[in-house]
Length: 417
Image (cartoon, rainbow, N blue to C red; front, side, top):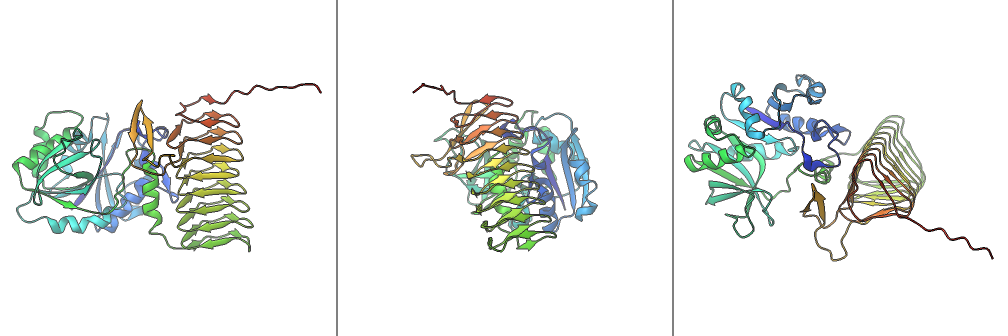
């Protein structure tokens, strides 16, 4: 059996990290997300993988033929971002029988593979993994009868949902599905339309899961993937590591080669500290922190449930439920607000549209090469574009476009005595 992984296109919704040739190349726990996904497929027992990628993707250079990861990878190039359905059709000639189709975010695939196979009977032509959801306006939602799928409704209007079950991006299909996909008109949601048509004319089942599932639609989804991977780690300490006697390391923490943990620091697992990073005096890392390689977390900084990307340096303050991009510099006394005063879910603006993140706690999402002045702060759900400069003593109340100066204007008053 083969697994087809969708890894083509550039998501405009993934701001401010659109500069990656593909979002799955972002590193978590020291390795790109796509590597975690390939390893999850291998762990499930599947070693034949078809990867659908863009023509300018760096994924092929990273993974090669898959030999170093214990799998065999065949690449299919989707030259234009014309949707998942068109990408799958490009791979049709390499698929001989039943196959899994999954989004590139599914580092958790290994947990579901056998459950999905067990759900499929002899007469079934497919099994779709689904999960109950409260707000369904941005998902594909199933119309069902008992455990059978009758239809798929894409992004239903509120009050018009056929059920409370949404698709989560792992599918098992028979070869017959590709015939239906071929016959479906060419449009952006061709895959979803084909699933709708296929379920109306063939016996398709669904498997409901209560587990949190990984997604990679928006930049804040990086936090959920980080947390999934962190919960499966074991404690380890690399070579040439300096750990001060007065520091504390509690629980499962990975500390890679060349890391220095200074006096008074407290690291409460699960946490990951990448190569050659420095954890300063009296720093607190807690509730799932990923500090990638060559970072500096300065003295008296508290970091909670956050991803700090490669080469970034931060000083004192508080960073909570946030993602900080590569090679950024954050001055002293920086603070992220991560909860709304009314305690409602945080909303973030993407492409001019307010998105309900579904998260009660979300700090800031900062791009690469951003410089933040001292005593600055951000409101919940604010996105800051790469190359921007945030002035000192500034409260960031709204999104900041790329390569922009955003600052509070002060009036200096000097009076002679």
